[in-house]
Image (cartoon, rainbow over all chains, first blue to last red; front, side, top):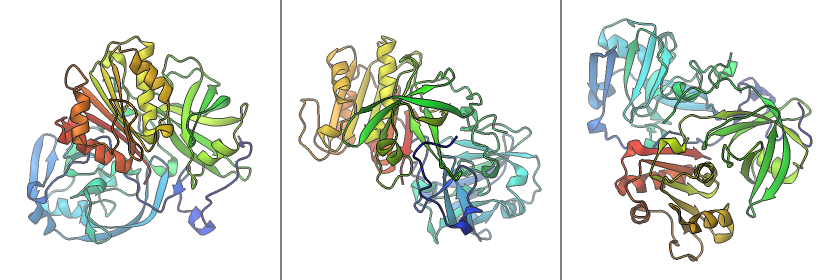
Length: 203
Length: 248
């Protein structure tokens, strides 16, 4: 349905079109969204735990985690509130390298990301491995600020950005695909921006 | 709180039934849905505009009306000069025009009178919109839940829904309005002439008969960060604070 009197305004250059998923617009800034106040997590209090169900597999403190191999990842990111930001530059530890340090193969097909503030989000395990996702520690070469999820956030850039949990403190392998915080509150169970899977039930 | 997943809600065409200017920069658009539209106070909708060449723009807007308000949905839209959708609404849209809408959306920043209280609401600028839906819902339900609204605006004339809020306050039925004007002197005895801070939150909570059961904070990111921190500094547990942010 064409809207009377509305004309294309903020049209991206043609070569950028292919990088913008349906229903998204290009944003130059970096908006902040979260369901509650920003937790201030000190690195001396920080820890990261890998779990299989309720059972901890391995826990790292900040120093130990920073000793893992660091990888750079520069990716476009897509927020469900419709902004897309190009070429965000992160450094962190690939989930592959976390698993290798723990000496395990992924034990289940589903994972729940866990955060310091109680936030959770579910991601199929195969979307986290093979170089697809990391626990990011740096943004544009600097420590990630608290409002953007620092000290450490999950980065799963090929899914809507609510899947990239802020203030991450663990990954939990689950037997079933267990909906997380937003997935229980009307948002899509998987969240592929290219299929525009924003809300519960979107095909 | 009820946090059931929203059912799938496809796009629908809505008609602009009425337009009402609220402040120099904020105008309310009353939209008539083509299908029945049930929602909860605090929820938002996505609005989509389509250009003749197929280009589409969409944004989220909070609903200002109460679920009990009748058939039309009120969106109070602030004009952002560099925006894509708000200039269309302010400069072009007229009664009778159709736009596309999807919703209701969001299952976290919502309140029903059955959720209880007391409630502490903190809004900055057009961040008051979803809080207004809660206040109107409370009034429509004749709820006795105590509510305090701390509403920050730059000046008196930019206080969205000002007359209605003062009317509800003057009923003295458990709703208290506290205005925080950042660029003008306070006009009412309960008001402040400064940005929100922890002392203001502490004093505002004294207007409630008991500590808040829920706090809802909505506004720009900078406002929400400052207000949420002020609430925490005033002793509100972080897990009671729900936030909604917009802007960069």
